[in-house]
Length: 196
Image: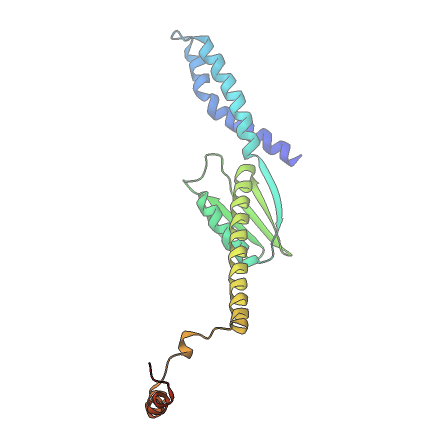
């Protein structure tokens, strides 16, 4: 019922804004000659486009589950800032986003309720879905990069344990070893066979 009321309200608002020029043309047709086909096409366009706008910008509620709340909230704030929203009010259980000039024409505020590793977003359908899609893709990227870093560190530790080849620093000689080597050098050269 709430969705139907929201749809009707958004539809009437959109139809009023879009059909306003054609209403003015209809009223002025009594004073100046106006082609009635233009007015009919205008009202048809207003009817269909208002339906599309009302469908996409009606009130909508969507819940998602997450594992890391801080990561989800930061990605949600970044996603909504890309869509032209700013944080108006933020508490531990509720975040309210407000549209700026850069957001869409029929964009309203978006409320986010956080509870028990889940978030419920309430706002216009198109923007809630787009923000969630952006947020979830950012979460996946973050989780993949974290898991790749973990795998790389585990792989490096295993490689250290299994690597049969010594590292370059194992071949480096410090000054005391070098002095000791100079003492042994004549003995080694005496034991080596001479070239024929």
